[in-house]
Length: 433
Image (cartoon, rainbow, N blue to C red; front, top):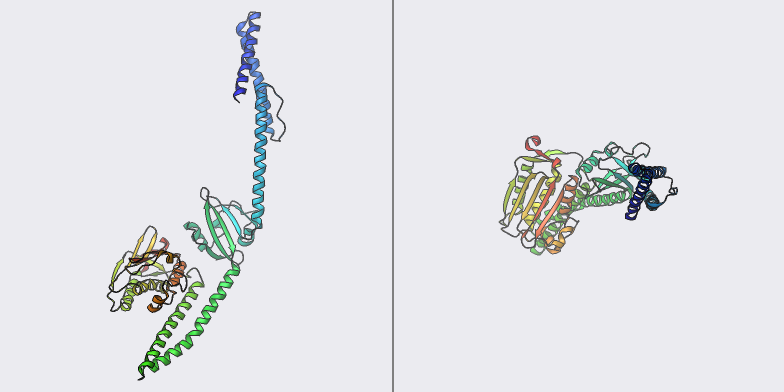
């Protein structure tokens, strides 16, 4: 382009020189010079009009013939146009292949812009979510997916965990929603049909629940007879054996109770109704039960409770979750330990924490603590009387309350288990009352 500019300048000088010479010969020097410049300008305007006309065609035709700087410009623009056309064709091919591959997916894929409007989706979204390309493009997502649980999940903006809900089109289909942020506030929504997995999970849950329920009757009979025998005068070896049998029967009964509770919690990922809970009396009741459990061990309990706010949820479930955390602290803290129960609120929501100065937990065990029957030390856990289901129950209770559990621990220094509840689950004390 530098050469073209030089050529254009030379042509201007040439026309000006010809006009100057002609004007001088005719005795009108200035007029000749002006005429030369005007002729050169008209020629440039003509070439510019030809260029504009060619560019407006946009039909891929060859550029007009020209010499000098304009010829170089036409040729360069033609080459740029061909390169741009090739890139456009390549991008169209990529987009076409992406759309074809997306259409072949069985999962619904929806692109949502930063205004929460529907921008694009594949065919599976028509089938699973009921979206219609003829009428729904550009509409707000909330106008089409109106389930309050989905609306709450979408607006919170925390998409680490997926959301399981029935399909808005077919109630018998169970969908798992996963949202990912990208670009400037855009979102990618993926909805997967997990109906078969849910049926298998329900079958497993029903089996565990039914088996646990069937075990309760024989265990009750066994415990009844053992209590009767232990009330009699028996030889010490027999009395010791019957005492151990009674202890194990009680442990089995606790296991059955926890299995039934866990099966009920797993039946739904969301509580059916939210009730105001007086959190202060609840924590004090758990504190009294923990003192009874720790009787004779010299534990000191510290309570730090925010008096201004309570919690929404299911009282029995939260009492079970909080009790499991506190009782674990009692069991795994050596004698004369310090256990702190704390409830506080901030901009992130409500928080209940149990801190102890007990034996602590090694980092490699923390990710698996909420798994069923996972034990760090089998012998120590059995001796403590735990069922191995306590933290699994805590996890499911918190999931049902849109909350989560954080665990921080240092080996030999103690542990802190914290339940984090979202802000919309926290209410002022006067509202709860």
